[in-house]
Length: 220
Image (cartoon, rainbow, N blue to C red):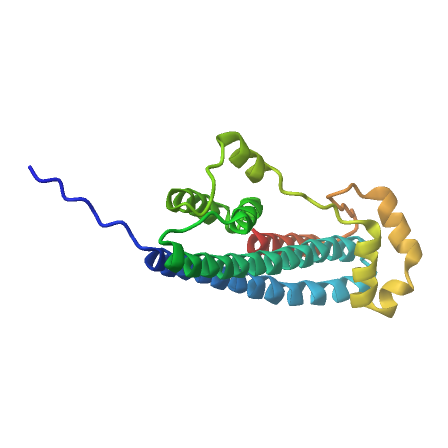
């Protein structure tokens, strides 16, 4: 029985496939950024409304969500830039392959892929790329524990009070600036992640949770 082997893809074919998938990931990131920024407009409006009714607890909780979202957007822009950089370096590797007859290892591609394994938005794709590029000779094989470390080492930055107050003042304007005592009182009675106000109407509380849930959804 004749065993027919599938022809091995040439470097140009591999490059086209990888770059196509990288472009798709970039488009997905761009869409997520647009979704986040669209929800941010609703959050900004809600912050202004909360400040007007002197509900600085809700305003500050929403400002904290806004700080998180802006950090997410910044990280997504960085991820997109690294994806484009991978595509560029792969193009250089293929150009060299035309001369030497095979793909050579690229330390820069390996570094970028490893960095992007920490990004939830593209972690799965980067794991697939790592396997394929290792097989093609572009990357060195990563040990399982190295992959696990890359996936587990994403830095989580905590929102500082200064960042939150800066956003709050910038959006609520004079309304928030005129209420420093209200902000200080809220700091004393709220925990790091929750704000409880017994006098706050149920509708306002539900609206706050709905806004935060929508923003969290587009960030994930």
